[in-house]
Image 1: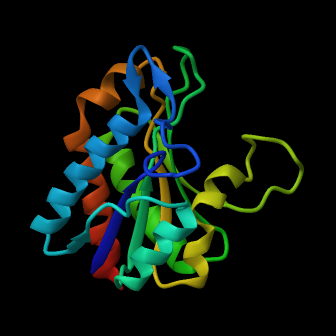
Image 2: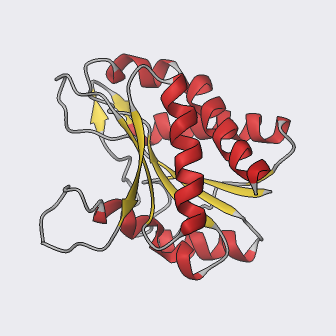
Length: 195
């Protein structure tokens, strides 16, 4: 299986300084890059080929390059924010609502993360915005980041394994990239072996 791991918020020419969310000096892009590097190591140990990070360009351009390189799976890494130290830590694995392969992959990765992380992680379908409301249950912001996958080769996921500013996540996420990366790798591997 060929997998492309891509840290969100990095390499967009329209936003060259975008590092995503930040909480108490910890940046989303740094946390996502760390857990994706760990996932890379674990996936290689499991016998998978991992493409280098997708690099510069829009999300669609990065997915196009991953597809042209033969990727079976495209994973875009993020970390959620918006709790501001309140309870409610949780994680989300978003897939394109049109993709049966993406749905099965998301379920496998979410189940693996759910076992490894100290909060619930669930798979959800992202779809186009249907009501003009930001950050609601259509997950349209995440969907927009991976929608290009549907017309191309890879099954696409957007990972938000937890909240950078959550009560637990604020300290747990940056301290545990290995656990997150291993869980992602094991979820992808389980899905690949079930096909």
